[in-house]
Image 1 (cartoon, rainbow, N blue to C red):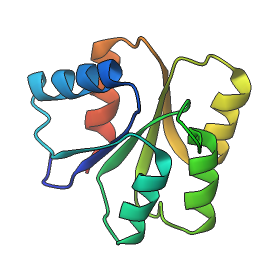
Image 2: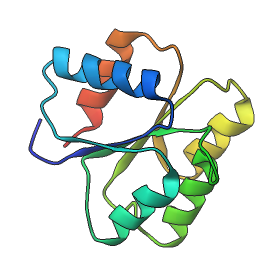
Image 3: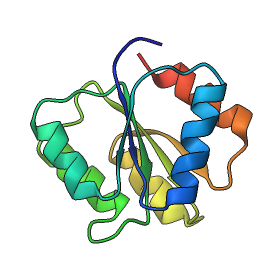
Length: 125
C-alpha cells in the first residue's frame, strides 16, 4: 500500500472500529480518514483530496450512500478513486445502483474479514 489515505464514510462507531482494526491488523498502513456523513466527505473531495479508495456505507444520515455516489459522479469527484460499498441492506436495487454509479465492490455487513481485506488490498493504489 502507498501513502494515500483511505476514506471511510461510516456513521456507526462499532462498524468503523471493526473496519479500522481489521485494516491495521492486516498490514494496511494507509492513513484512515473517517467521515460520519457524506456531506463532509464531499467537502474533503472538493479540496482535491484524492484517497486511494473510499469505503462507503449506504445507510447514512441526511445524504445516503447512493445519493453520495450520484453527487460525486455528477461533479466528477471520483475520477481515479475506487469505491467499495459496505452495507447491512441486502436490496438488489442498492447493489445495482452502486455499480451503475461507479462502485467497484459491494459487501454486506457483517462481511467476511478475509474477503474485505482482499478487496481493499486489490483496489488500493
